[in-house]
Image 1 (spheres, rainbow, N blue to C red):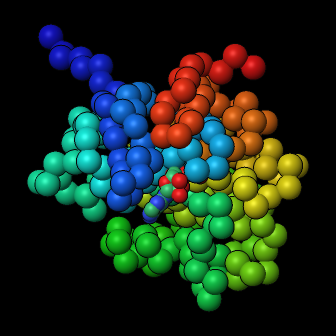
Image 2 (tube, rainbow, N blue to C red):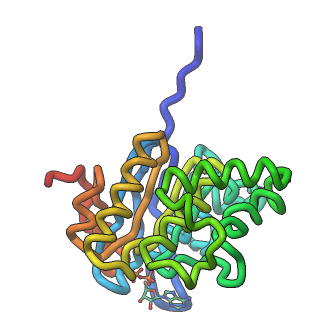
Length: 229
Ligand code: ADP
């Protein structure tokens, strides 16, 4: 017999997180399964960013348990760098290296962190640029691209190491609505190719793209339900 385990990719069990005396997450319990697109929605200051920072171990929490594929993020023996290597990050302000070309932005990590040769890294980067529709922009610098194009580069960079999970923090926060929809279509395509995605947004029309919406208020999960729209 094959042993089949049904395990959530991410499991929050009664997680509480404080900054000093201020409780940013209050007894949060939820799960994210492989293949899901989950949007974390809520007003500014409700704890959205804190929630996803906990997932990649960027913020320690004081109470509860948080598991990534069964590995406890709070345990001191957990190898956080190894765990983070399985997670791709996308940010509101793109966070590209401004002094490096698009191609260099996509190959630097592959060469330095993944130990790929320059040729391998270039080939992989070309493929991803193709997929995000930026083949002709490879030699440009981020400042020479539109916001939407920069976010496409950032998304390509986030998936270059084949992450199991993509965390996106307000990825359309700096973009007009047409460009936002294009970026969301790109995320949807990544999901169809097997990526699990957790995305923070305060924009309701962006949340409509998700399979499930977690709503936060004052650090409390107010609702957590499949998207009905
Ligand atoms: P959101 O992403 O929903 O806007 P955040 O998770 O960024 O909310 O912040 C939740 C709350 O925690 C806010 O009230 C914020 O001021 C506070 N907070 C966030 N980061 C810090 C920090 N490093 N130190 C102190 N307070 C913080």
